[in-house]
Image (cartoon, rainbow, N blue to C red; front, side, top):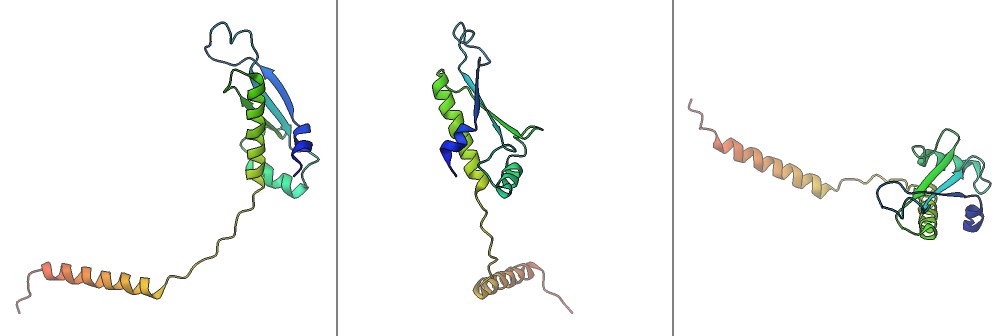
Length: 134
């Protein structure tokens, strides 16, 4: 994955942050919104696009565009760096292949111990009952 080529496909937009903040927040566009069109990307194969669209299915809009934003910092530059890192982390996580689970066999000693405990428990409960008088 070529990070620089991938970054060139990103579109950024600076907007005003929401919420309280007084005079400063009303005049400074420090929140950064990142747009990435997964369908139009030339950086991924068709198989990778399918895998990413499944991983990001709740984050993609109907046009297949991923929208991320960051308003953690008061600096627009810092927010741009944060949202870009968030995007790269998502892509790396989405492209990871899951390891196939190898089923393990239950050891004989474990089975034996379980049955032994079960037998002891049954004897303990049987000893609590009053003796049968014939």
